[in-house]
Image 1 (cartoon, rainbow, N blue to C red):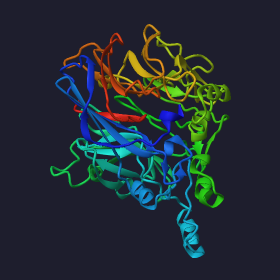
Image 2 (image 1 turned 120 degrees about the vertical axis):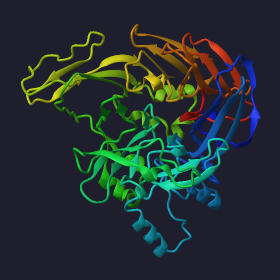
Image 3 (image 1 turned 90 degrees about the vertical axis):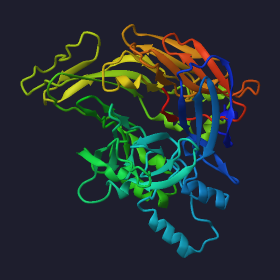
Image 4 (image 1 turned 60 degrees about the vertical axis):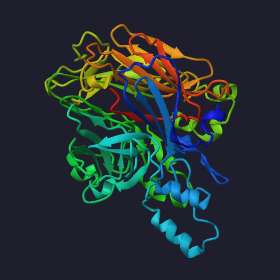
Length: 495
């Protein structure tokens, strides 16, 4: 697994044509942009964790049934500093870096002082976000790097804090039908108590010359105070319906005191997260039912599995040493919104007939939700995004069975509670992406796109195209270049 998962990738800066087997639908026109860690060592220094690798962005462009591929490293300040020094000089989530030992004691002391409140890396390796007409490589920090979706060139860096008071923000925003972008961040410093912030960037926020950042027109929608001032919840994303923003303040928390002293104590920022298994919440709500699906885990062990020393194990040893691996579970929660002070205590208030999810009013008026377990062993879920914030039937995702890296992709039918899979021996597909057919009426009328890599030198990396209805393979576009395992991305005018 190590041979392909955590080796340094290479750039393919000039577009190359893929060899297509089968038939790519002629209506599929545009570009699929993907982001993920692609460099795991600099000079003789290695990162500790897979999530620390320097960002390598790649793209698959579709024109009249043909596919071209290109990739470039994100030229972030972190990338530039590390490659210039030929060592890791900027700290990442799982790798803490320290000043060059040749520096004098006064320089080192000053660096320690600056890191009391860390100024995070700008290695945006998780996703591609669109704000207005601007595209940004993103992670969960205050920095974003703008990229040109056509050339993959790094345009420049912006700081959320120059436009809205957030120190952290998700890499997974939502988009409405008008093209507005909604996102959520955490405000740790500034006036007032720390809080979670919901904000919106209008679809028309970019200027015509694209010289001014779309974030200059950001609008704060609301803020939510922390339940515990020193222990804000970690969150990777949030939910959105037509009328509500859904935020889960989960028991996986950031310890602010540990974060502020991590540099002094010689530990990485990842160690400042803790799982509080005893943290249970509830809140009274009002009017209808709110239904939301999410991926849950019984513990936070998944993060540890991505340490590079774990990924270096051969498959049998990896499986044996991670028998306690908590598989992801897709769960459906239902919140009855018409609960009031007089609602009966102790009985299920969910009246929907197509789910086993329950919501019970407690004696103190809070609501205890018991989920409907939909599907075990699926991560990176996605839907036909035209059904975002609406009732949908199908979702697609990556199957996890023995490794944190998926070896299958699946389609799940919520109505029939059945699923279909695609897999190929000794191959690892990326997060599946649904693209609807032009004029589609059926929810699953379209294709699934996924890039696939293999440690087998006889299997070239390829872009997989599946019929979303049947999961039958329509085409594969073999890439005559190295392709890395990615995380997330976005479609740029793929229609």
